[in-house]
Image (cartoon, rainbow, N blue to C red; front, side, top):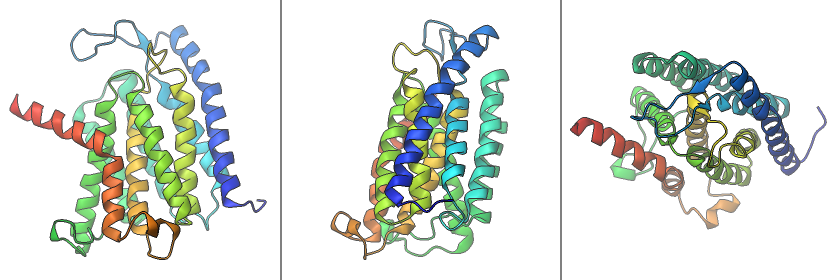
Length: 281
């Protein structure tokens, strides 16, 4: 592959993913309507008033996976194969749930397996909180357990906020933009490329998801976006060093953790609200 400057790679990844998503989503809408693959309102948990296709996540997934695979080379992201494997598991789980509805146990199992692959095999995990809550370096198994729970929580947080037209997609675009910029400043080309590809794929879908939505992303999209953002956040936390341009914004490793949590504040807060409300009930 021709060697390109990083900023060109980021721009091309974003544009290609955006274009692929904007081209594929209308075809998904057409096929969904022809085959009657709809999300039917039930006047209970689902508040939309008209039957609407809910397979938009397919367009996001393929635009993101194909474009990222084209631009990422092994030196950029050595663990990319594990991230792909985890993403495919979540894609298959999401599309099954969107088409035939899966029980929560099966969905959690799939998320657990995807998290295990990424945390244990790719070794992408939180091994220190850098003094937050008095916690510094964590033993290996505590680190693994903490990261798996965190990945599953963030994944479900994005799944839970996907209830209003454009909300989950807009937050996904915003978070991936900032993570992409920060990772680019940290010279982590592979992770930044992943962020900008997912941003472009999600933005292309949003063109058809603004109110009144022509299509929903479904679990296929929300699980992918939430899981990928959780992985990028972990990479960002541990990629920070004191010898980079971000030192003027983030003064310590603790700061990078706080920034990552701040970017995810809305889905985290909403997930805690929903869990607490359901426990009380």
